[in-house]
Length: 210
Ligand SMILES: Nc1ncnc2c1ncn2[C@@H]1O[C@H](COP(=O)(O)OP(=O)(O)OP(=O)(O)O)[C@@H](O)[C@H]1O
Ligand SMILES: [Mg+2]
Image (cartoon, rainbow, N blue to C red; front, top):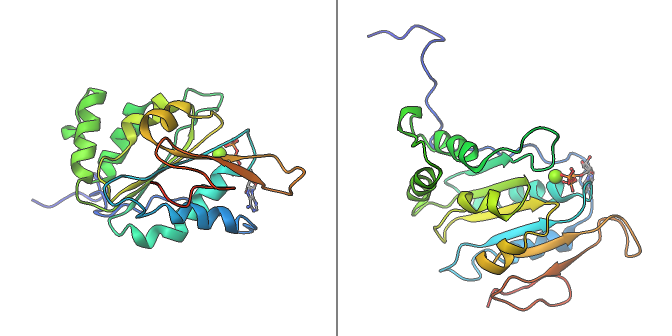
């Protein structure tokens, strides 16, 4: 049967490319970008989770997006992005809403998206199994908001930005945390690192995850 133009739901792309544009005049952060990339593949059996935390306006989103574009080629099955609006005046995006968006982007038809958060999270992890997908969870309010959005497959990676310290994500999920500071005594966009539970932290950022 012929489809009436404009009435059919457009098929979701097989390989989502959801990253927003990088900041055109992005400067600095070379060491941070390199440190973030060094975590990829450090432990083939573990899905790397990176978290950039710090007060508003310290460049967390800009750094995360810049890095995601830089390493997108390592994730040929796609890049997922959501602005979780954790600190907007409006309601934050719920994990269930974010999962619905991700599932649609992963070609799950709307009618097949489960109602319950846990079911959505299970289907999401199933869809990502054996894929190499980068997931950028931007402007999160806290660990609870992002936890259901974490892939399970070690071929994937998750990057989270938040004004919250994401202590739960570091302690429970093994996220490697970078703390961004306001421009200060060590120069603009300076920062320091706090390790995840599974590794030590040299001066700035853990170079190995074991
Ligand atoms: N390395 C950079 N080079 C150039 N501009 C930058 C850089 N980092 C951040 N900016 C600019 O600084 C502003 C604030 O950056 P950004 O939105 O990334 O901060 P944030 O820490 O994510 O803030 P929020 O907590 O409100 O989400 C933006 O206009 C961004 O384009
Ligand atoms: Mg931000």
